Length: 175
Image 1 (tube, rainbow, N blue to C red):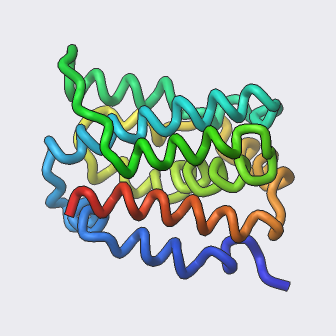
Image 2 (image 1 turned 30 degrees about the vertical axis):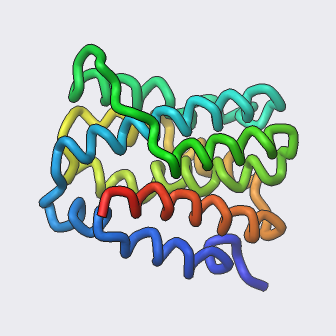
Image 3 (image 1 turned 30 degrees about the horizontal axis):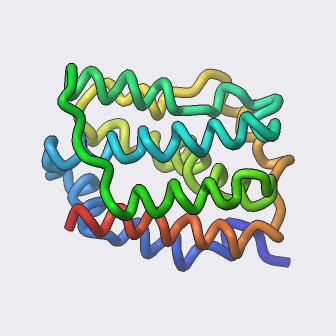
C-alpha cells in the first residue's frame, strides 16, 4: 500500500526543482523576491487557515497554524506598507481554496502540503532564508506531527497533488 507521501512524490519533486527553490538551497535567494513570496504565502495561509478553522480541521493541532508567524516574518523583513501586489497565481489558488472551503478532506490535503512542508522541509529552509523565520518554529513538533498524521489518509493524494500544482504555479512567477 502506498503512502500519501509516495503518492505525491512526483509533484513534490517538481516543486523542489523550481529555480526559486533551488536558489534558496544554493544560498543565493534574492531577498526582495523572497519578501514578495512571503507576502503571497501570507495571503494563502490566511485563507487556508480561516477555512480550516471554520470546519474544525485544526482541532487538536492549533500550534501548526502559521499565518501569524508568517506575518511576523514579513513585517520584520518588509516593515510597514506599501504591500506588494497579490500575484495572479496566488489569487487563483485562494479562489480555488474558497471553492473547496466546505470540503474537509480536500482542504486537509492543502493543509498537508503547506503545513507538513513547514514542519519538515522548513527546518532546512530556516537556515538559508533571511529574517527570523518564525514560520518554521513549532512548539512540540513530535506531538503536532503525530496528531496531524491521524487526520491524513491516501484518499487525499489527488487533492494534495492539486495543492502542489498551485504552489508550483506560484513559484514559477519567481523564475
